[in-house]
Image (cartoon, helix red, strand yellow):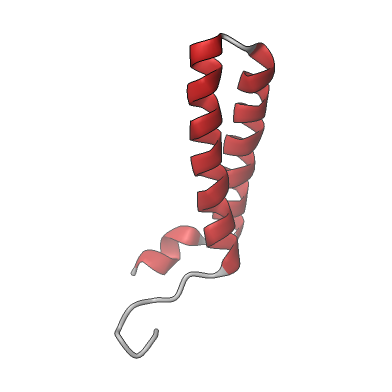
Length: 63
């Protein structure tokens, strides 16, 4: 815990959130353009972000 009483997130957590947000943005464009390659990139980003989130134990940092 930091001096303010908040838990500090680790690098893995930030990377997971970044990948999940990027996957959502790419998915938005994939939907607009109906592009299969963009859907594949979306899936890779979302699955990768989810795996990194689980590996970095992101939910344990919430409390």
